[in-house]
Image (cartoon, rainbow, N blue to C red; front, side, top):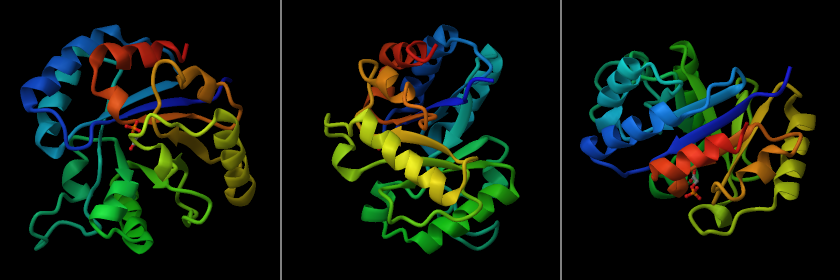
Length: 222
Ligand code: PGA
């Protein structure tokens, strides 16, 4: 069977509810359907519920994810979004993104707790690592390799180097790992990344905001 390809849109802190719904109405009907192609949109928390509804109503081949979740369960944690509550809305969660590590002092220990919460609630954690020094624990099965220099810069890593990093990670942590590449992926370079044998897709920021460009990216994966 051919390998899984994950195409994950990370909207970061962008889009009003109206803009988010407009995106779903354009992207949903344009998405290719293929068993091994897993397309996920990760909007802001404020859009999750509306997006989930729109995807269900349209019956689109699109999963919904979050960009973070709480390291704690439900209870007295003001401002947090617990996995136990989010599970009604999401099936995937981006955890340990470098922007969270840099701007919100997120540590490897916090990421590990978040992964645990996600797994207890049947949410697939997508753990972002910035390089070979970021710890990968046994539970981490879906990883995004995102070198800082490549994020939002228009200066992606080379597919060859991303593949070498992915290969090393698999050799170190297990061949069952699925490893995505992230950092300045567009419709022009996605094919060169997923062509690499050890890369299982991409985490996409800027280029995922534009509906037309995002559909183009998914079509490059066929
Ligand atoms: P970018 O962001 O595609 O805008 O480089 C990727 C990411 O931060 O996940």
